[in-house]
Length: 277
Image 1 (cartoon, helix red, strand yellow):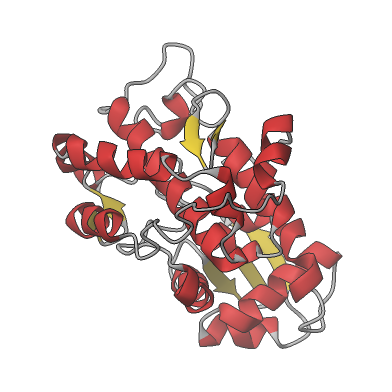
Image 2: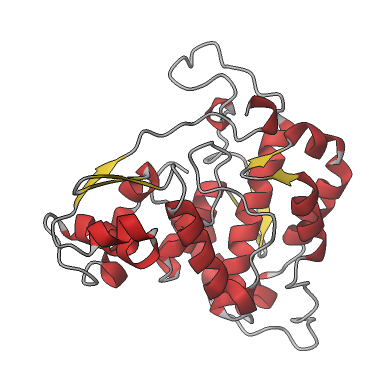
């Protein structure tokens, strides 16, 4: 999750609306994500992941990754926007789990002393070079998030759902995102994260929010910048609006006061591993 925007011919082709082929099984995909849900319930512990156990359960993880890769472009484009968003979030999070498991236990690269030794950032090309089968094409994690989810869907709350395997990232939830429940699930993801110490801290009139909102604050401007009166840039007003709408009561009161200022919390890139709690 690097904050850079990526676009490619593959992504454009992937999103082109094409009618499903006659006789295609547009409804064959399990939109309830049964097997993925079982995997999450077995290995997500609180806000962390038991990667050692997940690695031992590698066959089940491989099967889930393979199921995402079986979806064809025509099948995907026949789905509703909510079903597409849920699929892309779940795929991103599953591929992230696979990337970590494939390199677990993560070791520090000899030249990288700027990030924690066990960080996903120690995996070479984890966002920009590793490629995955998704909706009929190969995509990197950056192409899924920055080239597809962000520019093609007007849904900034994905930033509370996409998980980058870091301690400070909005946590991987122990249940899949599902199209028919997506709005409610994204509301809960936003509320739960902002209610945590990693989401927002209140210091008088200052709201110290996650650096995730710093990196992707512009995505919230259209929907949230007009929700409250506030000082500062349109991005700052948008983030104040996000806190007013989804934050815990003490933070929401500051956000609604008209005097709120935005600052950002430090970000911990350590792996969200139960072994390093």
